[in-house]
Length: 137
Image (cartoon, helix red, strand yellow):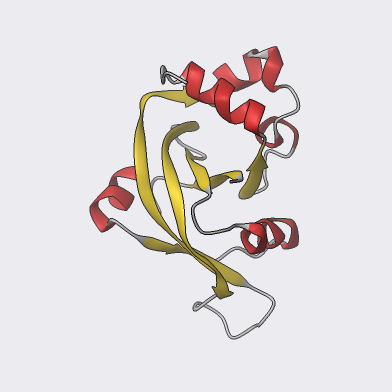
């Protein structure tokens, strides 16, 4: 299993809306690196759900339920989407400030490649963020 991070601006699509919808497709990605990350996702992988621009924190975990397919919002074949469903709400959101303050996460893509909307997360980073969120490992 691989781990990921998906960014969403809460005013466009919040964790609360995701919980209400119970499933959605992750579309609209127009960055090649982020697109390649979507293509690499496998069914059953988990992804942190990150509120960007406002809130600026990891608030939950999503599960990949359908692997990459043509993004339905464009006819350009270069772009893909994946389907995701809520997996778990974090006990305590983990802010970007908390992540940046933790030296163990200095190499995390969220710190190094802040603007990338779909990012890989290492096993070690995953465990540290869950620890910061108050989850037992």
